[in-house]
Length: 265
Image (cartoon, rainbow, N blue to C red; front, side, top):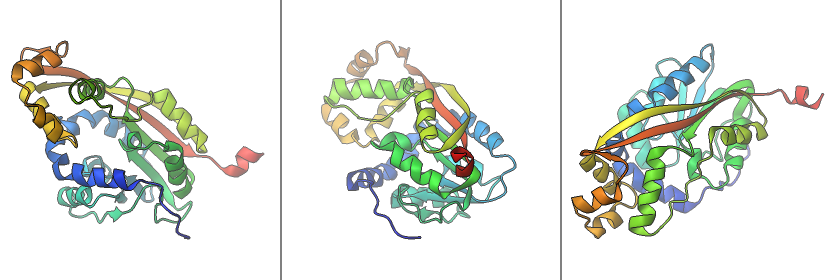
């Protein structure tokens, strides 16, 4: 395969190198494994009958990948070495690849299924990413895209806090599930199902604050030295007693690669 230049910015790579250091701890505080359980159940049902390799792009700490490897031969791909170290720690039998997902070192039309869990929201040009993922799929190969929905309470709350406390926008790309499906369809994939899944998350106030401190802008939050009363004021409307209550909402698109010959006929 001829090498193609990656369009992923060095800044994004460096950001995830830093995030990888505290990602597992932050994910634990946010109960990530439980929150995405429904997404993984739906994904595994959709992948039933797939016999070949499943490529999990942006495998991160390996939590979604851990569900896949119980049923399929999996290649995990991520561009951050700190994240890949988490994958290897959680899944010692997996040998993931370090690569950018917009330049996957895999032959065209060679993969039975591709999964992309909570990755696309980091990219300003998701179309180029989806085109690359579609490239490696075989005809009738299955593609699963899951990401944070535009009405995900947690991300919207964090957006709000970052503006109010730090005076800056996060700039994450978060379409609704229908918007996700349009992007997928434009990449030459046939849509089989579009869903929004939810999970009610209750997290103690101190755990919520700690997960913010573990984020990529955590040092900036610490510099503000906010008291508990100030946090309570900022979180008004989301607090019940000493707990933050939010509903996680995830968009899920299940699709497969169409035959170009059929499309041109």
